[in-house]
Amino acid sequence: MKIAFFSTKSYDRESFLKHASDFGHEFSFLEPQLNRQTVALAEGHQAICTFVNDPLEANTLKKLSEMGIGLIALRCAGYNQVDLETAKSLGIRVVRVPAYSPEAVAEHAFALILTLSRKTHKAYNRVRENNFSLEGLTGVNIFGKTIGVIGTGAIGRAFCRIALGFGCKVLAYDVVESEEMKQLGVNYISLQEVLSKSHIISLHCPLTPETKHIINRETLAHMQDGIALINTSRGALIDTKAVIKALKTKKLGYLGIDVYEQEEHIFFKNLSEEILEDEQISRLMTFPNVLITGHQAFLTREALDQIAGTTLRNISEYEQGKALTNEIKWK
Ligand code: NAI
Image (cartoon, rainbow, N blue to C red; front, side):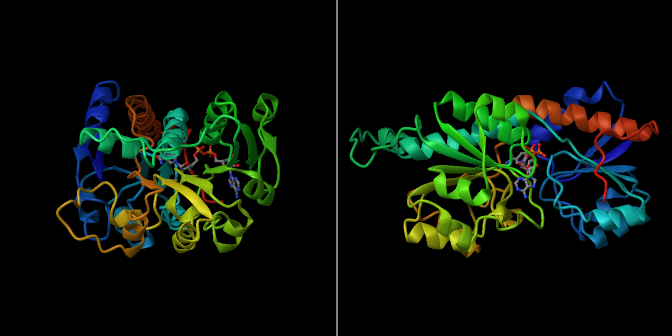
């Protein structure tokens, strides 16, 4: 099949080309993000492959349908960026990669925790300037802390295993509880209890109408003072304005985010020569206890390998008229 890849980076090209000979598809690697202006680039292909910040809204989907595109292969797990209702009404099928190295994301969440708690980001810069002073570098132990996990799917479970290994008490909230996690010692309680009893909270639920701004002014008020909040899931789980306020009042002691509410205008681009117009992310970057990474939690060799393999299998299933193992269905 002829597949148009949008938002292609060098690491996408490398990982997909590595698997190319096993599937026999034809690839067009396009750098632009998919949007109303760039959708025309999909002409002449039978499927498109997109990533987390390619908005698949009604107008774009209609254009794709007119071009005869019947399949959208998301090379990611989350699908909040897709208007599934419109896709279904147009007969466009949507597949995704439901799990690719959940450990990659869970380990990154822990990297954010460890960096913030031991200030290694500051130490790195200091030592490079021959400043070996330890003033201001006092950290906190992770051992013995209570970690709250919101969402114990594939990534949340991998995160719980790491937290238990560190000797933490792990509390969790999920609409579906995991027996495996319970046996390992994870304690499921209500969302409000997780928020009020934890020293560190890590978000691992998907972005849905129910979870949008799950961290807001009211839920922040339930938390202990000086709490650490980690978000490697989706930016809009957090009400950024409320979080900025909580950082100012020191309710939030640390914030580690790999995702940001308005990230589609910023992330995955080199904007180092430009003036950043986004006031909220600019404000977040002024806090010494905030660590931001640009949606890189998934970015390991192992995860890229799995993403490419699963995406190409998804496309082959469609080409061969088979049942689509990883289809997202509009309910
Ligand atoms: P998953 O589908 O395996 O798990 C999601 C869990 O959240 C499930 O257990 C589900 O029951 C739970 N959940 C759903 N609604 C909930 C609610 N209202 N309250 C509490 N829990 C709820 O998904 P997985 O693979 O663990 O991924 C989680 C999220 O991580 C994805 O939706 C995606 O947004 C994000 N992600 C981020 C990446 C990154 O690079 N930063 C990479 C991959 C995923």
